[in-house]
Image 1 (tube, rainbow, N blue to C red):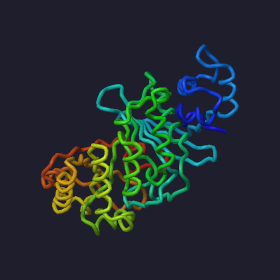
Image 2: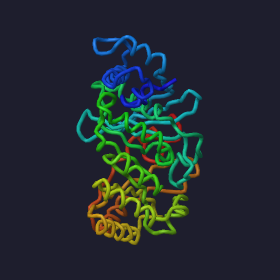
Image 3: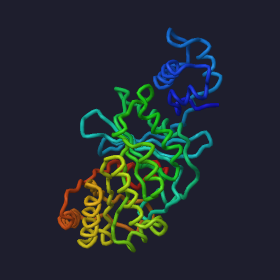
Image 4: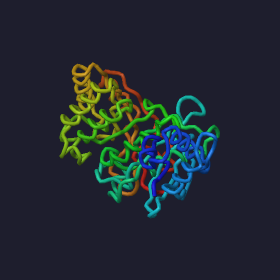
Length: 343
């Protein structure tokens, strides 16, 4: 059976040839409004019957919905039909009443970044496109105005390692008759898969790219991010440069500061050197996002960089940077903390 919430009108019409593209748009809209598939003045009864016979709208089990007590972040622990658990987070935007959803693309993660709780889980499986879309629908159903204004693929998993399903989900997220989220408000974050970055540029050119850099000192990056032993920083930034040239979009470079590990002036200057080189090659300045480290549980080898050291790092960087607020840490909803836990 087709998972109807994972289909654009074009894909639905191709899967159920007896319906027209106009009917497909109306039927997709019914699905995403939470209405039953039914004939209307614009949908023939035979078309509605054909779609009901071909597809269904599967759901995720909501195991826990946990609101932070310190900010408006909310974490959702969900389970797929096989019982596999994964998490999504509701993130408040600067304008009151507007929210973004941080979605997972895999159950666990195979990349094993040293400072990420998800990496400790290992990889269980990829999520299907409908399971990605459904995370957004779960959050949207709990918003008073029923609208999500952005999506970031920065939850559990490496999105570019599940790119077929991620791209299929993005099509639905931005489809006007489905969730209607502006593609420029969708960001896909990666630890560094060059082939996937180039494919993302070709197939979703309006979607933004986020890259987990964390340090530009090569051996240090390898020790923190095993993927860097397979795909070098040079390879990663070359792919990001191709993405910037093809899309005209500046990438976001994420840097999680770890006390005494990657927060030195030398680390800052190495990032700045790479950023200036990137701008010279592409005409685009990377958007530097500084993230405070969030504890990841028992045996955590890292500590958060002090505010004084962070200020010194940003001064040594010598270029514009943004301090990202990573909220929901009291319920393990902050960056790097997603590990299917309930507090």
